[in-house]
Length: 192
Image (cartoon, rainbow, N blue to C red; front, side):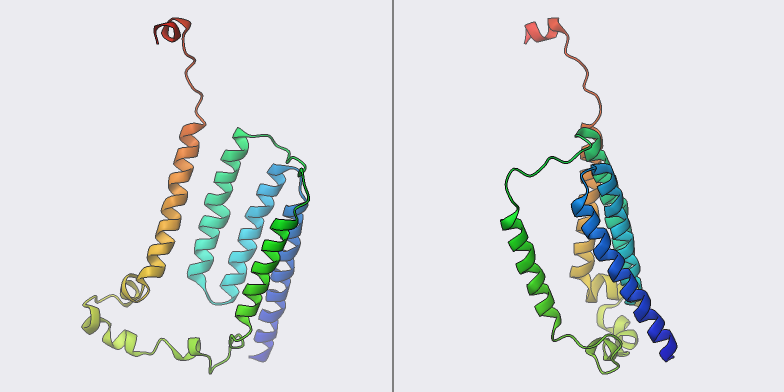
């Protein structure tokens, strides 16, 4: 059992290293097509990491939205713009400071979290088996998975659905806007 846990830790460390290296490569890229492809790889690596953390629903959402829809959106946008990134006009001190402060706040927020795999952690002790036993009585839905997603985690599921819906609408708007416009005839322009 400890050998499996060690293997998972090694693979997790490898994935986190690859995530960091991919993020650095994306930031340093000047070719936008290569940056978009690396962003897709970053999302797949993130999905794999979340799968190792026993969060298959989050991993699936990351793979679908992060690697799938976001990559399609970026490629559609790239079709409407140039293929090379412009050099920044001024040094990125303010954005770098915002990212550093946000990163520090996120790391600070993880300091009081229980260790991964701790059997005494609240995530290991809850949800209690009573969810399975009392679901039909509490909310009158016989399917436990549907009850958890639609009722107990309703706001979370609503948020994920809104993200996917918004991404889909954005893809449709981009694809509709990328169609070639019919040139206006000179006679029509004069009549207007």
